[in-house]
Image 1 (tube, helix red, strand yellow):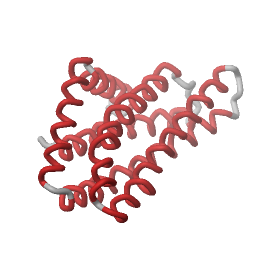
Image 2 (spheres, helix red, strand yellow):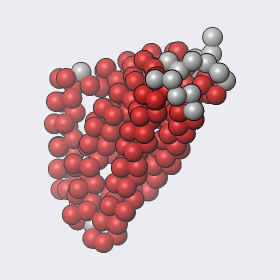
Image 3 (tube, one colour):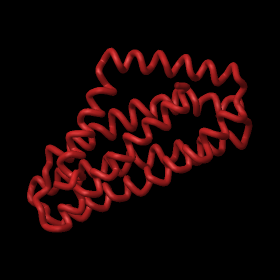
Image 4 (tube, one colour):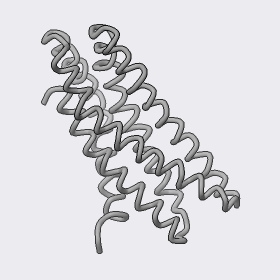
Length: 187
């Protein structure tokens, strides 16, 4: 599997977590107490799998080469599109954490901010994933040279192997499946 195929596979896991986030927010809307432990696990997944692991590979390897080799169009697509969206996602998660902390100390109104930031993150990521899968990755695969793509694949392979040694992939896929069983599996 090349690095682009791997990133697309990771998108499937991230998309599944977005469904968990929606269901957790629906529970809040329906009057259920916020399960802070679950939200902190979701945030852990988002920060360490979706962002550090997945976006890390994109930013360090594929996007870097698209900026370096695809001229103004590639640079604008990545800098003004994908990287801006990565940063916006990080902001939503930061604001989600702050809202959770406010709810924990008794600020009921901050439940609105929990839902707003969590759902805004899901909307952003759903569109972001579609753009990458349907446009950005195929543009990079078509326009980057075979040598550059091979270099991106090699870098991604090393990155993946190091993450595997740390148990990153298994930890977060297991976490995803546990949360899916709680929130999305019909019982």
